[in-house]
Every structure is written in structure tokens, then in C-alpha cells.
Length: 223
Image (cartoon, rainbow, N blue to C red):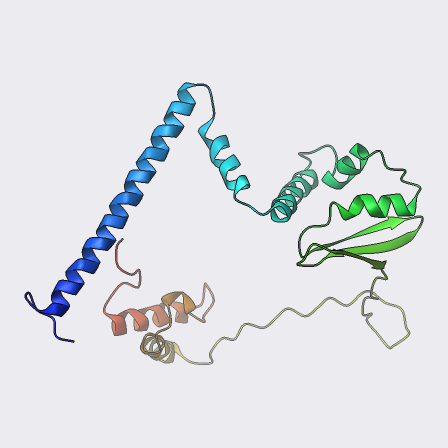
């Protein structure tokens, strides 16, 4: 492709630039219009932050919205900021006979999140309800998997925690770390891919190598 002031490619490029700038100008105008509408709503006694939140909720899929709201309420309850768990409150509003396994199961089907599951216990028996991508809820008995135990098989002991994953830190000196940083830039890796943990002196050398090879500070162009 040959670019120049009077070439066909140059004119095509100018057209593309003009279109992008026009789109950005339109987006800015729409943003200004939205701000004006929210300012007007505030003058009429409405809260702009609440309006933005409602607009965000209206754009969500129903099951995704229910799942998000249930998670937030669960977190609030865990922090002592809500009196009842969302599931307990919802069941209470359904007028369900909590002694009836079938009634509780049917009621809880409405609360299963999209592509998610919940486990309930009725009459000392655990039940797992899972909703698939098509919205159908599958109900089956649930049995907890036994936790691995320390010591010989069949013996007692405490549950064995899963081992923490080991960080893949290169076994090199400071100069090797700088060389790895240079190579990372050549391999088109971002500067946040530094493999050395914070506090490791080699982390700075890796960054230094990346920056020296790129000729920049690693922050990218200003928007």
C-alpha cells in the first residue's frame, strides 16, 4: 500500500479517520445528553446514581439479575448488614409448608440462578437443584464428597487442605531477569506479565529490561 497526500490510499485513510472522529463526537454528544437528563431528574427529586443502577439492572437477563442480587444480599448478611438471608426471606414470602419436601423443592426451583445450583436440606436429606442454560431445573439427591484425611487410609485425622499452587519463578540472577524482560517485550508480552513476585529484587530488573527493549515506560500511549 502506498500512502501519500494525494494517493487513493491516503484519501481512504482520511475517510476512515473522519468517520471515527464523527462517531466519537456523537458518543460525546450522547454522553452530554445523558448527563443533562440526569441533571434534570435530580432537580425533580430523583437520585442519578439510583437511576443509573436501575438502567443497568434493566439491561441484565432476569436470571443473571436474580443471581447478582442474591449474591449481594448473601454478602451483606455475612457481614451482618442484613437481618435474613435472601433465600430464607423469599421462602417466607411463598407461604410454603417447610415440612413438605415437595413444596419446598418446588418453591426453591424459582430461586436457582441461571447455569447455577443450590443445595437444600429437608427432613435431614440434602437435595441439589441445578438450572441448565435452557432454564430447566434438575433435582437430585446430594451427597457431600468426603474430605481427604491425613495419615494412613481408613485412619483418623484432620481434613487435608489442597496444596497451594507454586509460583513459576525463573531461577536466574538479576542480569538474567533483565534479559528475560527484554525477551518478553520481543515476544509481545505485556509488562504486567512480570514473573517475579513483589519484594523480589529481580522484579525491578525484569521491568527495566522490558522498558529498555521497548524504549517506553510500559504504560502505553495516552488516550
